[in-house]
Image 1: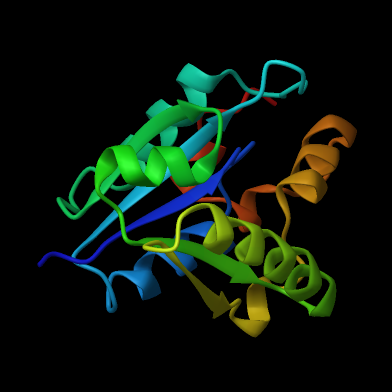
Image 2: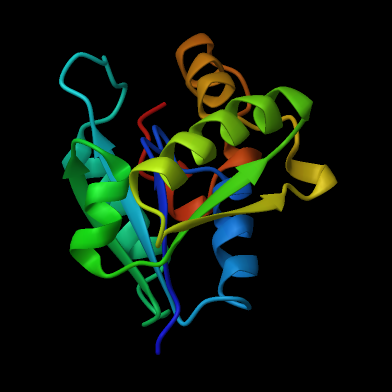
Amino acid sequence: MRKIAIFPGTFDPFTLGHFDLVQRGLGMFDEIIIALGVNAGKQHMFSLERRKHWITQVFEHEPRVGVQSYEGLTTRFAEQVGAQFILRGLRNSQDFIYESQIAQVNADMASGIQSVFIMSHSSHTMISSTVIRDLIQLGGNYEKYIPSLIAQDIPS
């Protein structure tokens, strides 16, 4: 049986930390679906279409990575696409506490889906989409924290 994982998030924008987690996850899974969660109540800097386009371009030469958007519960989406795993990254102890709570609820809702945590590489622990958005808005040097393909498409 193929091992399929989803990597859920808003990816607003997709960072080098996210990229690293997907690359490392490919050593464990046959396929990874980057799952862009849609939350109508949340304000995003970049449109869903733009984020989806960027991530698709970043992985255009990696056939084992797909990009899809979804609404609702992550476990329902995982079941719909036949994923047995939810891939999540951990940068610090706060991430661990938050993600472990979510993983326990997900396991209760869908016992056939396991959460898998990968520790962020030390060079990526300070990177978050929130910080990157702040850098973009305030004119800081964000380019070194996101894939160059995405950085080139963000207006100065």
